[in-house]
Length: 306
Image (cartoon, rainbow, N blue to C red):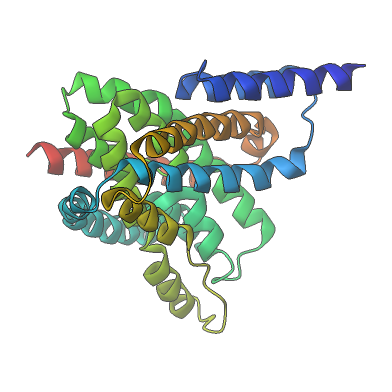
């Protein structure tokens, strides 16, 4: 009986997310509360669903963008993206050795902070032959900070009186995962959402050179690099909209559906927050992740403001 109620509430929450009844933070909180009080159904399928829903949502957002604006936005964020990746990786190497953290764990936390959270960790972990525990700990830490960012960044953006463009660039650079970047930008405004999505996906492409560098650094040159191919479909969606290959009403419908799919993704992410994972992390890896996160957020904000 309890299992039946869990499933009913689970699907009711998904329908509420699809209807737009939740904001981004509320979707995450609703999922977390559900996980606390109910048995989570379809747990294995949810991980796959989160992966695909987020990719479909990002691709769909491309139907609301134009290629000229996208290129201009990407070029604006390029110098900040490059500088923050290089500096964060350099600082991560120093702190990993200073704190005497396992090199692979430190590298995955650093890569996740510097580029794009869980996607970077998933792509780089096979390239450095990281074991399951190292991967799960790095994912748990980055995910914890990623969830916090969804609530903190919009508040800070308003406190610093950031424009839509400034906030879009800032959250794309300083928030780990694409899900929270898009979620935070969605709260801030339409223009911030477009800019954040473009800059973040441009940043995601740095997974490839980072993975190659990682293979040479850890001397695992024959491992496979996971390339984020969904970015190609995002670009195709932008081109389709730019050249009016779809009726405007269809494009608007796809963008709206993408925003709702993002809310479903955040709901499922909240449901999969595991308190058990956080209990086994340890203070040093958390300290590394916090210092790197504060550094990249502060550096990028000062870069944007000054």
